[in-house]
Image (cartoon, rainbow, N blue to C red; front, side, top):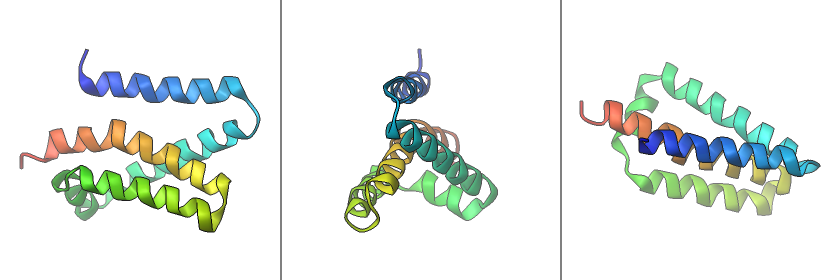
Length: 105
């Protein structure tokens, strides 16, 4: 099993656990997944963003995580949890894929 497949399974498991817990966490997980998908679509359609994701190191991932935590203070728990869920998905799934595929060009 490759690292990317393992990371995808971890992300799906997190989503399923959030669905089983219920309540507000379902909204956080769904909003985070939609945010992640919109970010992926944006990066796939804008070559400059894809290049930035491919050429940056994990520092970009850490900055996104810090922004998600910082947003809790200013935007509230709902937006912060959604951004945190999207950031985890970006770090686990999309960024390694883009770096492996386009980082060598």
